Length: 418
Image (cartoon, rainbow, N blue to C red; front, top):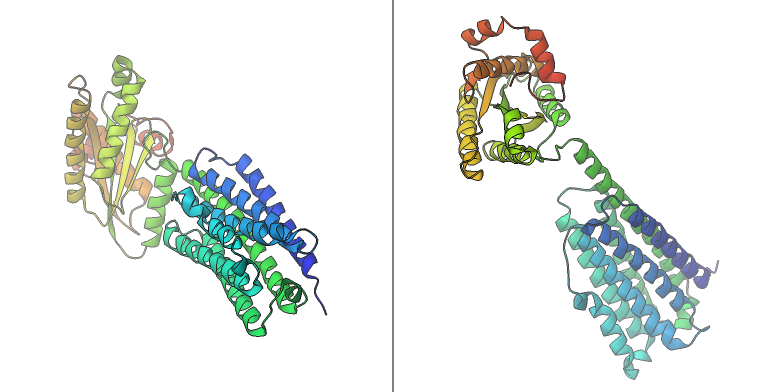
């Protein structure tokens, strides 16, 4: 069966133009429009549109003058491939100069002005496909090297581009071995039709991968926003309980030690009343920075709400946590005083507790830490207290313990005690 090359080329062009239009809609409604992410979508859409136009011009060979079909059509395709590479780089916040982007198309157009090159079909085919393969190879390398967040869709894009490279190499080798010396002979060959069929597959895979990458990143952004405190950039209450709960579940039968701390900024309402909410927010961000700097990568730290923070330290005993919490307390007081130019003395109180995976639950251990926090507040604030201490426990038993625990674990406001 003889496959219609013009029909297949038109199908590829229409597919690319439709993909460009759909990506433009994605750009229009992207939640990250001002970012490099949105610019990547915009360039990718333009690249798909230009590629569709270029392939359509090439398919009109014999119906329009040769120069627009040969030189301009292939030049547009090369520019589109360069823009697609630029879009892929921008997706991961990498940039290149416009001279580099325009170089392949410029080289092609320059050589088309040389009669010896322009009048020979096979050298033109080899050069244009060699340039496209080079651009694809760079795109594959960028996708492999920059996918630090391990997007699954980026791997699909890489695989589709590898397939595209293989199909182009096979096409160039086949044309060279069969000695196709003219465009007319190529259009009558099933090799060209088979190549166009593979181009349809790779084009569809590329468009789907582009959409998937955008959707996957948008989904991750929304998930991250739902689990992160916007002021301090720490995890929020929900993320803290999810992360710590997963660790406890994972090590439920390993009997591993862990420790938790609850922190509450002292007299925080007075800070807001006397110095304004902007100053209060600055104190919260300072403490968040101190909390990040004094904990390890595998620790879970969060702002639970208001002026209350929490830390979950895996594989940590109570004495180690006590030293960490006390260092946090002193570092924060010094930094707050220095940041305010000596105008504000802001301190923090902490309650700590320890447990073992499989034996102690998170809520139980946090309740113990809350007893320590309450004791630190009663003792004059700006100190760290162990919720396991008998003196702390007996003192706390005088209060409505259950009500305090409910506040710590479920209220979205600040700590039960000020």
